[in-house]
Image (cartoon, rainbow, N blue to C red; front, side):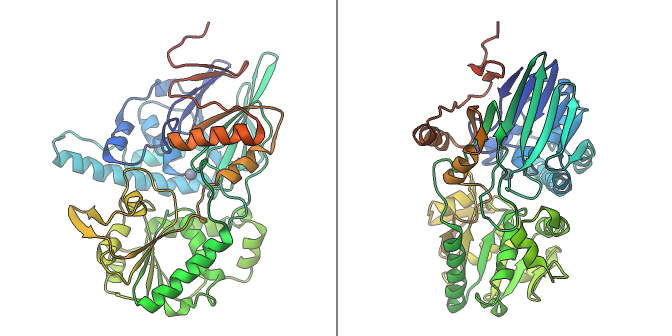
Length: 471
Ligand SMILES: [Zn+2]
C-alpha cells in the first residue's frame, strides 16, 4: 500500500494524490490548477496515470482546486464512483458548471490567439455527467467502498460539506489509517463547526496554505470591517468585496446581518452580485444541520434567506450593470475572490480609480492574479487590455479566511492520536518549509514535504523519490 503525490505538492491549487492498495487505485481529490494562463495550461497536460484505471475517487470538498479536473478525468475514461459529502455534491453542481463555462470562454480566447483547434477542457453536459458519478456521505458515516478500503468524512470546517478524509486500509493482517486534511477551516469562525479532532492515524497529509503566518484575530477583523464601512460612508464612495462565491459571501452576509445596526447598514444598498454566490447561499440556507450552534441561534426566527430588506440578490446581468450607476452608497460582493475574472472586474473598472472608494480583499490571492497584484500594492493594473491607476483605498483583512492559519493547523495536528508520519502536501514552497520548521520546534515532529511523483510506503512510512521503483 502506498500513496503517490501529484498536484498541489508545489503550489496551492490543483490538489491530487493517488492511493494504491489491495490492487485498487483511488484518487484523493482531482483539482484544477489556478493562477496565470501558463499555470492553467497545465490542466490540459495528460494525467500522470491512466484515468480508466482509477477505481474510485474520494473528494474532500467542492472548491475547484480540489474538484475541478474531475469532469476531465471522466472524459478520459474514469467510470468509478466519487465519494464525497452530500452538500459537496450540491455545491459541485454549481461550481463545476461554472468551471465548464469558464473553460468555454478560455477555449474561445485560445481560438482567437493562434490555437484554432482549441477545445474547452469540458462542457457543462460533461460536468453534469461527472456530478452523477458522485455518491453522498454524511460526516461520521463509514463506508467500505472497495474491499479493504473504508472512508469516513470528518468535518473540516472550511466550507459547507468540507471534509478531512479518513481512510482505513487493510492489506492482509495490516491495517493503516491515512488522514488527508483537504483544506482546513479556522476554529471559531462563523456559521460552520470547528474542524473535528484527527484521532488515531498512521499518516497525516496536511495542507499548509497559511502554514507560515497567523491571521488577524477574528474579533479585530470584524471591528476593522465596521471601521471601513464607517469611513466609506464619510468618503461617499462604494465598497467592493471581491469574494469567493462559496464560503466568504455567506460569511459576509452573516456578519452584515449580525452587525446591521452597529454598522448602520441601513444607509447602504448591499448587492450580492453573483448568480453562483446566490445559489450557494441557498444551499447553505438549506443545510442548517451543518451550521454551528451560534449560527443556528441567529437563524432562529429568520424566515427568509435575505435577513435585511436592502440586500439585493442580483442574478441577472442587467441588474449587475445597473449597479454601476451608483457612485456612492453601494456595498458590492462579487466574484471572483482573486479578481481573476467575473463581475468584480466590471465593478473594479468603475471604482478603482476613485479615491473615495474602498476595496476589501479578504482571502488567499494566488500568484499571477489581479488580487495578488492589488495586495502587493501595485499602483497600476491591467483589466480588459486597459491600464487603470489604483486610487481606491485597499484593505487586506486576514481574519475571514476560510483556511486556518498556522495556529489552527497546529491545533488540528495536536488532536492526533499515536505518532503518525506527517506529510505537508498543499501550499506554496515557502509556507511549507516554514511550517515544517515550526512543527519541528513546536511539537518535535519531523514532517516530510513530498515532491511530485514521490511515493510513501504506507506500511513502513518510507518515502521513495519519484522514479525510484520499489523492490
Ligand atoms: Zn478549499
